[in-house]
Image (cartoon, rainbow, N blue to C red; front, side):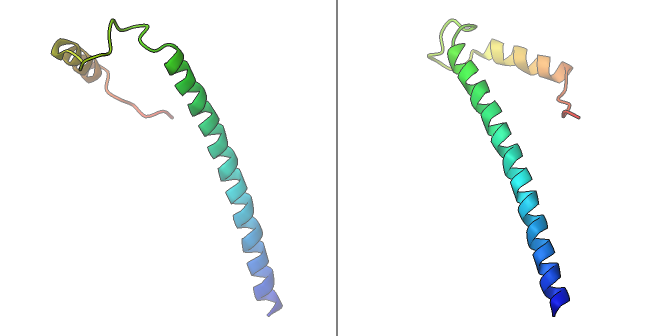
Amino acid sequence: MNIVILLLLIFFIITTIIGLVFMNRLIKLQKENNELIKNMLENKSSDHKSNDGPMPHTELEKFKTQFMQNPYQPPK
């Protein structure tokens, strides 16, 4: 019976530590995401003439061909 209680206590401690590490990383990522969104909002419409309508077909085709030349590669 003591062994079962000891194993449950060890599992509880390990789960708590893993949860804290995960939450710490999640908070860091959320702060980084918030900073990137703030930067995007500050620099909004600095590159484009107007954001009133949809993207023109020629611009869309240009981005599509550019993407096809350099396919997405996930970070390592």
